[in-house]
Image (tube, rainbow, N blue to C red):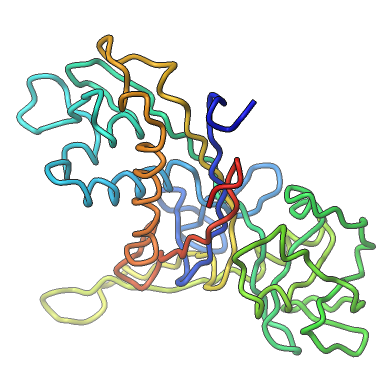
Length: 311
């Protein structure tokens, strides 16, 4: 079956953090920091939820279509509300691609489904300079099978000079210079990152990541004095600049859906794909997540090979 006949198209992307990225869990928590970031429950690894990517993507895509911002970008509003909501039209590239609710057409889940952005390469300080850590479990997702490592061993790429030992933050491990990530399976990643990649065991990877997250301290300013407000000091985590993440977007074929008995986007899936790509282009300037006014959030989306061999 050709790609054009498939009921969906998968868009795969790598993303490079140009700034620290903070996607918080909401509220304050007792622990290492006041405001922690979202993590996978099983591995305790940080991630960017698909909902965060989808929401920002929709907003940025709406900014580029005349007459669609902000009502087709935000939440749907109840019928009769004074605030405009989603138009819900079958030819609206935003409502059909990202979904709509509470409109004249009822609701529609949208053609685009966003996965969470997961860690691929994580920057860590070492005595040999900056390195980017990964693990066999992650590489298996890219069909880059690597042998299971001893817990005390790390394999390093050719760009890292070691004397048989390499520290990752506070952790010192035995090093072996025989790691070479396949460039064809990880396209778009700069050579200066790929050539400084290190492979640690799945067991150690979460410790390496969580012990080397960026932690910042901020304070609210009292406008009457211009000084720090009493008791307003807080700390928060962020994925550091240089982190590489991977995520996928699945775009369904509109020919299998109807909106008020009409064919969405005139059965043209490419319109939905274009809306998604238009939104992703703005991540490099406008970012994702919180603390954007504090220099956080910008992501450069690197083009991975898509299903069907299209770019």
